[in-house]
Length: 422
Ligand code: HAM
Image (cartoon, rainbow, N blue to C red):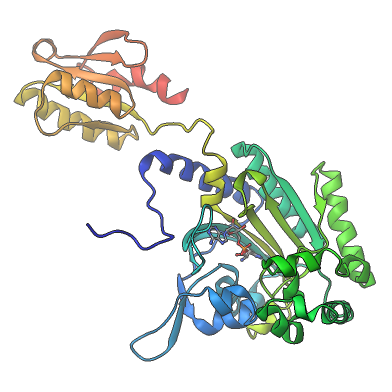
C-alpha cells in the first residue's frame, strides 16, 4: 500500500457535503457583495512569494515547497493566495482597466509546517481581495463577510481579533521603540528573533517561541503610535463594525505572519480549535501592487482555512448526500426501461441512480436506502405488464402506482416534484 505524505488529507463524500456547504456559503455571500471569482495557478516563480510575503517570515524562510523546473528556474507551490492574485492583477494590467476590483478564489495551499490537528501541509483556503480602494468600508466589508459565513454555517464559538499596524509613515517610529525594548532582553530572544531584531523587528511579535512570547506582553503597543491618518482609518473600521453590531476584541500585537500588511489586521479565532485557533485572517496591504511593478493601488483581503472550519463544524449534524430516486427493477425488459428512465430523469435535473448489474430486489432496495434516495421507483413483472411503476417513499414507507402512459417524466413529476421543491 502506498500512503499519502504527512500533513495531507483525503476527503471522502461524507465530509464532502460539509465541504460543499462551506464553499457554497462563501460563494453566495461574496457574490452577493459583488465579488467575482479569479482562478490563479497553484505554482509560481519563487520570487512571487519571497517578494510578496517577505524573506524574514516563517512562511518564506522555513515553510515553502520549492523546487527547480527542468530549465533550472525556481518554482514554489503557493503557500497562500494573495501574492499570486497580486501578480496576476499586475501582469494583466487590471489596475489600468478597473477603478475597483473585487475578487474571490479558493484552492489548495502548501506549507511545510509540522503537521498537527488543524495544521496541514496541503490545506485549502477561500479568500477574497479588493484592489483600488483605501476606504475603510472594504476592511469592514470583508470582516462582515467572514462573520456572515461563520454565523450561517453555525460555527459554535469564535471571536474577532482586530488591530492596526500603521503605515510607512508611523511604523518606523514604532519599530524603533520595539527595537529599543527587545534590545534590553536580547539574551532571552530565540536565534531567529535575535537576527530579526535588526532586519524586521515587527516579526518578533508573532514569534511562537515561549521566551519571545513572554517578552511580548510588556512590549510597546502599536496602537499608541499610529499617525493621524491610520488612527482615523482604524476608527472608521471600528465604527462600521459597531454600527453592524459585530463584536471584536482589540489585540495590539496582532501583526500576522506576512510582511505585506499595512493599517488594519484581523483574525477570526476559536478556542475550540486548540493551539491552531485562527480559522480566517487578513488585512490591508496598500503597497503590494507597487512592489510587483503596478501603479500604487491600495488593497485589502482575507483568507479562511476550509479544513479548520470543517473541524469547528465536526460535531454539528452533517446532512447526508442523497438522491431523489433509485430505480429498482427485475428482469431484462425492466432493466432496459430502467436505463431509459435514469437517462431521461437525469436530463430533467433529478438526481437518480440504479444498479446496472442485475441484483436481487432486496440488495437493490438496500442500496437505495444506503444512498439516501427519497423514493424507490420499482419495476417488477406486474408493473411491466400493467405499464406502471411503483413509487415507494423510503422515508414514510408509503407507496402508490403510477401509470407510464403519459411518459415517465410527466408521470413521476407529481411524486418526486414536490419532494424536490421542499
Ligand atoms: P493566513 O493567516 O496565513 O493568511 O492564512 C489564512 C488561513 O488559512 C488561516 O487562518 C488558517 O485558517 C488557514 N491556514 C493557514 N495555514 C494552515 C495550515 N498549515 N493548515 C491548515 N490551515 C491553515 C493568508 O494566507 C493571507 N493570504 C490572508 C490574506 C488575504 N490577507 C490579505 N488577503
